[in-house]
Length: 419
Image 1 (spheres, rainbow, N blue to C red):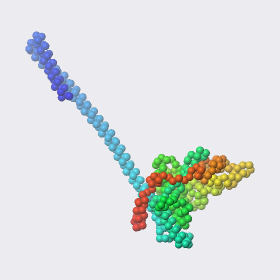
Image 2 (image 1 turned 120 degrees about the horizontal axis):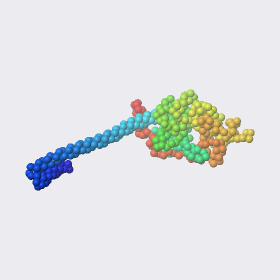
Image 3 (image 1 turned 90 degrees about the horizontal axis):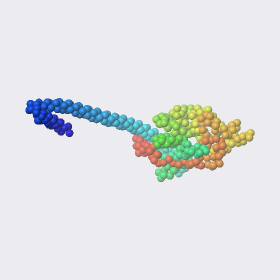
Image 4 (image 1 turned 135 degrees about the vertical axis):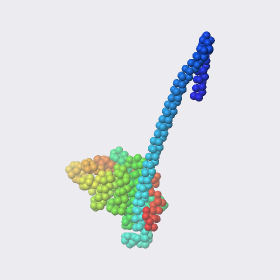
């Protein structure tokens, strides 16, 4: 458009100067005046044209500069976006590397647990209690042990969760985890079935350790889904004292300290009272990471609350029947036989002063709920509120290391190789 504008302006200047000259000539000014007018008018028009041309050129340069600046801004924005994408990619790579490293560590732990269990079962070694059995019974025990080993190795371990509810609303507050093993046909092996052969063989520690490991994985998976749940997971005295397993387990928890609010380790009252210095020290290490403890199978209500507080025990589970059988009347008031100087309804308040919450477990009837509420107990567990149910298969599958990977690791270890 600009190429057409300038010639048109020049033509307009020429015509204007010519019209001016002709006008003066026809008005009697003569040819001299007309030519002078023509030259003067054309010179003036060309001078004005020069100013206009420079103005247009300046405007064009300004437009070009603004276009360059706009292009520069767009380029800078694209560079910033590219930097952000590169930074995110670096973070993803680092996250994947940490995840792969963590998975490798977990598979190594699982491999070690299964290997230790396999060594005990291999070569047909039977403990003295099993060796005294008839040959047919020995064969059955060994077959059952092999089924247990295969279930652990091939990831046929199911976790069941039973709700712990708040009273009286019965809103689900926590869950307790249970384990079940399955044979190759899918039949569930109840603990009573395999413990009778696994315990004499010394396999209970290996099984407990593996289930502890799996429970941590499940809690971590639920936490990623923003499911704010607290899960009680049994930890045995043997696991706390296992010099091979516990340091690895502690490392696993150290990298998952954010789970401290969702994972409560549970042990029986007898095991807690019988704990030695090693077990107490390892409990303290877990407490330093922020994890809490619970006592179950409580039969003696004359508890050392200061010891519980020092050990970070935050929950005590007492069977509803045990609680109610402890009730007796003295001097016109209802008390607990183990604490005759304390009113029964003040027992839960006393434990709370030490940061301990009472959970009435094995609640089976509505009548028991009424009696428990009269004792000011705020948490309950039992079939009345919900039976243990298996956690969905998808979560289990996503938390379990690939069985093929474990099998490969076992094969390498059997061949004398390193993981």
